[in-house]
Length: 222
Image (cartoon, rainbow, N blue to C red; front, side, top):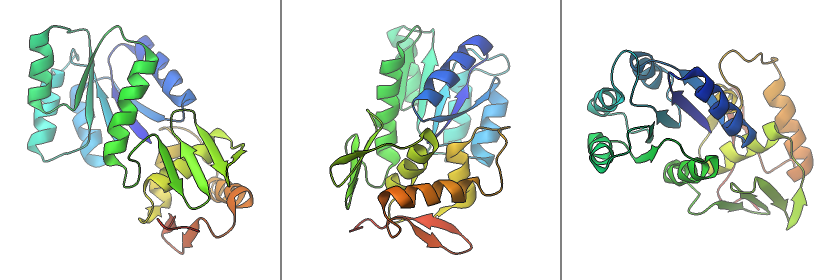
């Protein structure tokens, strides 16, 4: 999953990036509202984490612009404004959730998982089961035929992206965006290497190659 973090406090942003990356979430960061609008409309993330007190335009204005432009991506407000009036204003503007600072990382992760389930085609809970494979997004544990399988972080993130979108073809570019943040160096065959390793652990037929486009997992894999 790819998250856009809109936060002008650089130290806080770096801390959040590190914490979320550790949980298998790819995070890209901008510090201004106008940058956020451009990125969301040009390179749409899965979820936006949005501070309100931005240096150029207020975060509420960012939400209004995005919703006016029919952007439906889930937005989670992260802000020091903690009054009931502020919360109501944020939700009424079109935010999906509101979390006041300071907050604990486990609560942020839980709220992200709720939004993640809304955009997934398969996940009605924190566990996704397709054929012999089960993936728990809370524990980051993967089981194959009820036996725990050890995956690297990149392998887990890739499998999660495919399973959450089972039945839909995921392009190479989209899958790479789920695994890597802006500026990370990516070798030309990195994605193929991860797919190869996953197939060795899960079975060669579980992940289908759509030649010239990308990869997919059937919803009824067996």
